[in-house]
Length: 479
Image (tube, rainbow, N blue to C red; front, side, top):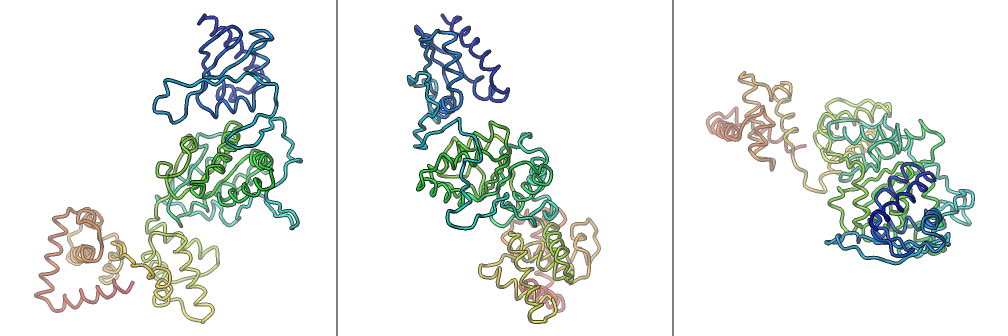
C-alpha cells in the first residue's frame, strides 16, 4: 500500500511539474508527503496552515485534475497539516478538505475571498488614489536625492550598502531576498532603501517599484476594510516588482495588517520579486510580530547600520557641503564631526542650521557659531564627551597630528599628549580602562593607571603644567 501511495503521488507530481514553473514546483510541491490512501481518498502532509491555504487558493484546479486522473472521478484529497509554532510537530492534525470546484476560496484569517483568476491591473483600484481628490503621483514614491551616489560608505554601513547595491542591480535574483536593513534612528536606513529603488528604476525602467512606509500601508488597509475592497488592496501590492517597506516595526501588534502583508510577501517572493524591509531593530528583537513573518524575514539577509566613525562623519559633512556648493572651515567640519557622533540626521541638521544662521544673520561660520547651533541639537540631553574628541583637543593643543597618539614613538611631547588623553578619558568618559588604553596606542589598563598617576603628580609639582591641564579641560568641556 505504501508503494502504491508513493507511485500515485509520483504520477501526480509529473503532471503538476509539466504545468507550473520550476521554482513554484520546488516551493509548493516538493515539501509535500503522501501519508495515507483510503479507498479513493489520498491524504497528503503539508508543512503549515498557510501552505494548505496557498495550495487551495492557487492550485486547486490542477490538484483536482491530477487526483481524478489517478484515482478516478470519485478521487478526493485530504490534508494533514503540521501546526506552525507547535512544541510537538510530530503529531500533525488532519482536516478533511476535498478538492473543490470553487475558484474563490474563503481565507478565514483575512475574512475575504482570494480570487485567483483576477489578474488585470486595469480593474484593480489604486490605494494611492483618493476618491474626490486629485490623483496622487505614486511613481515609486522615491526621493531622488537619496541615491547611492549621495550615500557615504564607511565601515559602519559597508555590508548593508554592498547588499543593497547587489539587490538593485539584480532585483529578485540574489540570495538577499528579502533584504532587511536595521538600525537605530538617523543612521541611513531610509536613504539606503530609496537608493535601492532609484537604482532599480534607472537600470530597469519597466519594473514596477514602490516605496511605502508601514504606517501608510496600515492606513490603506484600514480604508480597504471600510470600503470592502481588501481583495483589490492585496492584488495591487502583488503586482509590484520591487516592494520597499520602511519601518516594518510599526506593524507590531496589528495582526490583520501583518496577515495581509504576509500574503503579499509570499506572493512576491514566490514569483521572484524583490522585497526590501527596514526596521529599527533586528528580527530577533521584534516583539508582537507573527513568528511566520519573522521567519520569512530571515530567509534573505539582515544587515545592520552602525553609528558612523569619525572619518565617515567628516566625509558625510563634506559630501553634503559639496552637493550644496558651500564652503566651510575645516576646523568647523571637524568640530561638528567630533561633537555629534551617533545620529547622521542630527549631524546634517546641525550643519544646515549653521549655514542658515550664517546666511540670515550675516555671521562668519566659526567654532563659536557651531557651538551655539550644536547646543540646540545635543544639549537638550546630556552630551557625552568622546575619546576621539579628547584626542583632537589635546593634539591641537600640542600641535601634533592625531595619529601620533597611536604611534609607538617615545618622544616626550607625544608621550605627554598620550598620557593627558588617557587622563581626561578616564575622568570625562564612561569608557573602561582597557578600552581607553586600546584607543591610545593599544596600551593595557595598567598603562592607563600609570598615566593618570603621572599627570596628577605633575599637577602637584609643576604649576605651569597644571595651568595647561586646566586650560585643556576648559577646551574639552566647551565642546
